[in-house]
Image (tube, rainbow, N blue to C red; front, side, top):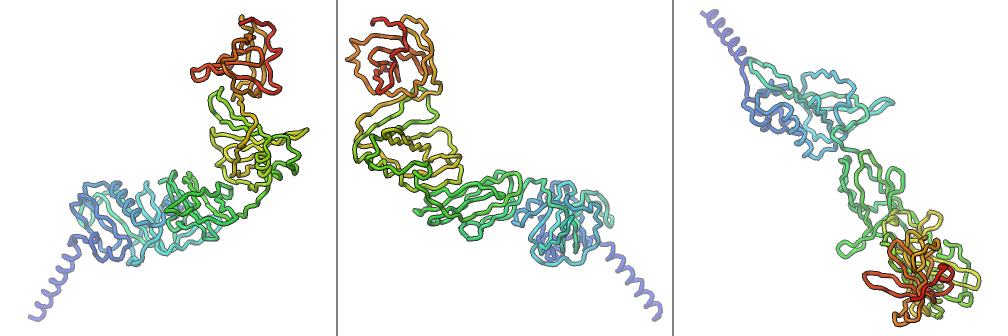
Length: 475
């Protein structure tokens, strides 16, 4: 009887073992199972999954209307949302014929880096971010792999659409990281800790990502931004919450970049030193001249010119020669249009000129920042000149006979003339210019229609139309 009971007990135990081995266990790994707690990060559950089974080891089998490729994309988006440092792709792994082995419990540590390979649908997550390097490749240490396998199959009589596989590898060989998703590495160097918002910067970005860096102003120095060891720009002063800050804007290109902020002392020079103008005294100056005009405007617009012999005007102009300026290393001087102003010092035998274009003095391809403009307050004469882009025009007598070419119209200076004085003027001819017909009279008088109004002017100094026209017709 004891033998019969023993045999019956053995049969019962065998039946229990067999039954347990065949049992299809619903996997709760997506909602806090042992496997989930050992894996960081925990993964999103597949959508429309009717059944999810686990082998209680390294695989989870899925029966779902959501495709493996769609789930793999959800997986990537989820891992991206965890703000890991994205450093490359799994297609950079040299050994593409990977053998996934049964895993022991994955260490419960927060992964800090990952790779993703869209073609093979797997992610490599590694927790300690340690790499080793030799002449040929980098090696990831302690890599945790998550793979979405697109293969259909059967597990314990359960037909699945795809499965997820988990593996830990102590040593994975990688090439230089490649990025089919289109992100690139950004490294920020700021040895003197001038950038106040650099903690917002991570390691990889897509092309076109815009950055704005801020720094507090530095006395007598520039904070120069270099990109890949080439000068990119210097500070742009701006006001934030009532405080002056230095601003730097940068758009991420489609390649890796290193941004380096360097403090560079400013070397100040006088304007006369920059332009090689000798020291001038008040008694050396016969008069000073200023000319203000515009760049890139329609031809025919007028410049504004002043001549002055006033002692205060001469002294204020001479003070410009001692004004400190510094070489500007940015590229903000390269703008379309804008304006210019010239200050001229006229002596007995020479004329010295300071020309400022859009706030910069340019000498030998160097650009010096200019700040303080002056105005000649007591001019002896105010006049104009034409802004032209073609400086040679056909000349005709008043009856339409060609009499050659007229040159250097932009050099002619002229002042306003009253129409009341035109009664005794003789019409000599006209010039066909790029901005209209100029009617020329004797006594250096001419007229032109500007903005729908006929205006009259008189040339000054050595500028004259005498000799240009061979025939004269009385008006």
